[in-house]
Amino acid sequence: MRANRKILLYTHALTGGGAERVTALIASGLARRGHDVLLATDFDAPQNRDFVDGAVRRVTLGRNHFAAVARLAGLIRREKPDVTISALSASNLKHALAAGLAGRLSRAAVSWHGYASSEPRLLSRIGFCAARAMTRASAATVCVSEGMLDYMTARWGIDPAKTLRIYNPVDGGPLAPAASAAELEARGPVLLSAGRFVSYKQFPLLIRAFAMAEPKDARLIILGEGPERPLIEAEIKRLGLQDRVSLPGYADEPWNYYAAASVFALPSGQEPFGLVIVEAMANGLAIVATDCDGPREILAQGRFGALVSKGDAAGLARAISAALADPGDPAPRVERAKAFSGDRGLDEYEALIERISAQVPAGAAEPGAAGAPVRLL
Image (cartoon, rainbow, N blue to C red; front, side, top):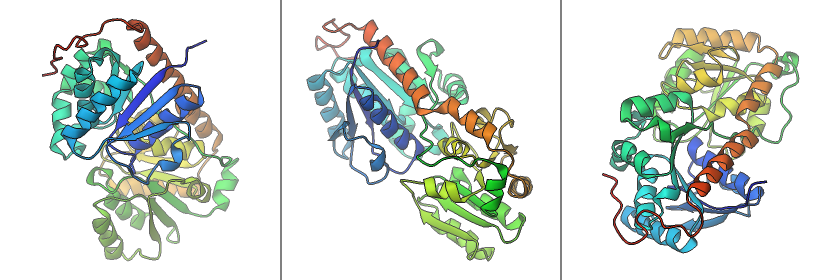
């Protein structure tokens, strides 16, 4: 039986993204298992709030990066958590600096959820440049897929001996999944997609493919928000699809949308994991996705859904048409989604927490604890 631990999780905010939702799910899942969980963010955000269990303690650090690092260091020093875990590049960098200032880098783990090319902010890019040093100085580095791990070791030189893959723990929601292909067909030709409205998600490509797909009375729903909304709306208008495509915004609780659709499509040009694919599979939907790291891994090289070459609108249209015409038996997809279940992911995070805690017993002296600075760069 594992001991209950004090755990601090940190990311910039619970804004509308997959990594942020995963952080909320990990915090909540660990708290429900009896751990003392503290979730620190730079600022409060309304998205993903419903995923945070009431047992999770919350702390807001402030938007100023320097102040956030100082406050996080003070929080770590006061709370003395057994393990601290961060998510996303800039937050990883700030966490490593704060843990170093608090003399507790040997209890810190960082996690990577995306590629440098999808991070426009300077601090995030600096975080990738510091990834090798962070891995060397901290207790462990987590990557959310084998593809992400390969990328971080090959491109950024992190030490594979201190790195492990833990798939994102995914909550499939409270509704029963589709029981049969007939049930999916009875919903009508409804295509669902979801993600942040940013360039690498390639929603304009999906809209162009949808315009070519059959049947012509099919409907497309895209959940999400982001800076590319005007571009996406313009593409819908250009193709005359205003009556067939809807953009209802970010959905904290997307389950009713999954229950109304028969097919889910993800057109991303790059995707380190693909949380929404697992959610859709857990609800029984047929899957169409571009062939990149996360979807390829989740779909087992196409065994559990259609994979289409990146940027191929015509190929995407054909795959969507085929899936809408015959969504297939949902049972294998539902079973495959269990490989990414919340319980399995939480088991792996608990094992990591135990390993780190065992390496640095309570009361033991730690690097930097005596006041010597810990160098990351």
